[in-house]
Image 1 (cartoon, rainbow, N blue to C red):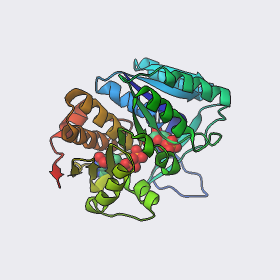
Image 2 (tube, protein in one colour):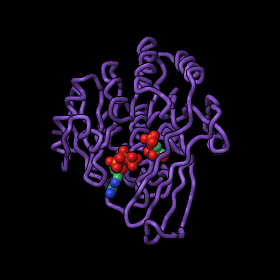
Image 3 (tube, rainbow, N blue to C red):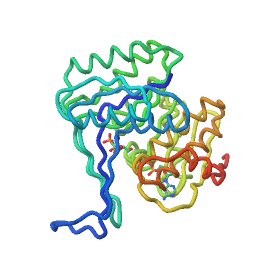
Image 4 (spheres, protein in one colour):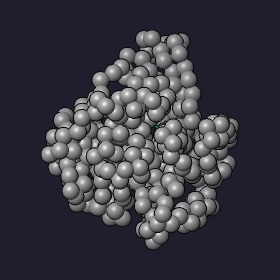
Length: 303
Ligand SMILES: Nc1ncnc2c1ncn2[C@@H]1O[C@H](COP(=O)(O)OP(=O)(O)OP(=O)(O)O)[C@@H](O)[C@H]1O
Ligand SMILES: O=P(O)(O)OC[C@@]1(O)O[C@H](CO)[C@@H](O)[C@@H]1O
C-alpha cells in the first residue's frame, strides 16, 4: 500500500485576476478551491490513476474538515491526526504570472507527532511512504529524518519531495525517489541551471549522497531522471499552462503509479512527465485521460 504524509496540508484558494494591481482593490475573474498540500495531491492523483493510497498527516478546524470531506467524496482513504488549530489556507494568485502565498501552518505538539510516528511504525517492507511538502513552522528540520529512520528500521520504501535541509537529511537513508525542481537543486549546491544537461552532474551527486532515483523538473524546459544505471532527459509536451499548482506532485504520483504497474524506470519517467504537464495544463489536478493523451508526446533521450 502507498501511504502519503502531508505534515502541512492546505486549502488551496486559486484566484484569477485580470491585471493585478498591488495596493488597490482587485476583483476576481474566476476562483476555485481544492484540498492541497503535496502528499494529498499525490493521493488524489494516484486515485485518478487507479492506484489506492492512504493519506496521513495533520488536519484541524474548518479547513481540515473541508479536506477530510473532499477526500472522502473522492473515495480516498485517510487517517489524519486531528490538531487544535486550523489547517492553513494557501493563496494561489493567477494574473499575468503566478504568485503563491503559502501559510506557515498550525502548531503541532509533541503528542501529535508521536501519534503520526506510531502510525508510520506500523508500515512494512510491502509499503511505500511518500513524504511531501513543507513542515509547519512549529516542527523542527529533523522531522523528516525521524520519520525515515522508522522506515529504515522496517525496510519501508520511501519517497521525499521537499527542499533544503529537510531533503538533505534524508539522503543517507536511501530514498527510492526524490524530486527537486531545478531551483531547489540549485539552492542545495549554491548554483543555478538553465538546461537539462547542466542539471545531470548535480542529480548524480544526489545519487552518490544516497538517493536511488532523482527526478529534476525544469518546468517548461524538460526534466531529467538519474540513477546508478541511467541518465535520461525528457522534453515536455506543448500546451497552455493554466495553473502549475500540483504539477510536481503529479510527477511523483505518475512515476509511482507506472512503476508499480511495469517496474520500468523509463516508462515510469515518461508517465511522470505526462502527468506533470497534464496538471500544468489544468486548473486543479490532471485527469487520467489527459495524462494518457500527453503520454504519446513525451520523448525520452538516454545519455
Ligand atoms: N510550461 C510548461 N509546459 C509544459 N509542461 C510544464 C510546464 N511547466 C510545468 N510543466 C510540467 O510540470 C512539471 C513540473 O514542473 P516544475 O518544474 O515547475 O515543478 P515544481 O516546481 O515541483 O511544480 P509545482 O508547481 O507543483 O511546485 C514539469 O516537469 C512539466 O511536466
Ligand atoms: O508549502 P509547501 O508544503 O511547500 O507547499 C504547499 C503547496 O504549495 O504545494 C502544493 C502544490 O505542490 C499545493 O497544493 C500547496 O498549496
